[in-house]
Length: 199
Image (cartoon, rainbow, N blue to C red):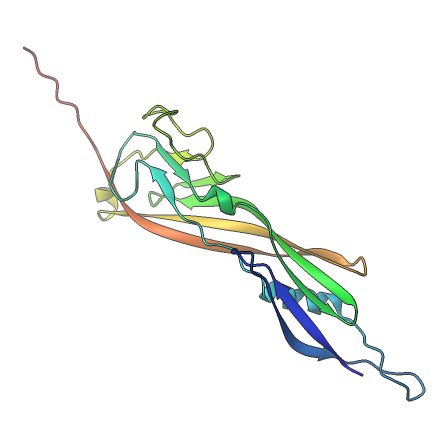
């Protein structure tokens, strides 16, 4: 007898759900009851299809809603609370597969031709702790020219990549293709010139 496959996921809000999607056929011996044959790799692909990972929420100091200044360090970060693994499961006939997506890195494309590779979520700027004008300890960028030289505005894009692996009740498992989510904002970068006067 064919058996249904249950696919379960664990979304951001922690409220998982399961859906029954297909049956796995088998071939019985001597005309007896069919014996399910589990394709664990295919089961892993089904679980992966149910896997959800969050988009990055861009944070910066100075904030991107304002004006960024040439030669003034910009701090970059995304939501640290979302920097944790996400899982999804699929099962059939007493066998199961779990797929896990683990945050890997965030690559920031700054719009001026520079890319910033950050191994973590980045450090949010805190005026009570940090000094304005100091560079970020782990994820930041300093513009060297005005965005008016590049059409008036720069597009900053955060690309968040996730490593994906699967494991199964049979002991089979391995790596799967990575996942990526992204978000973009427009920023204006200006030059500020000091005016020195003599009294």
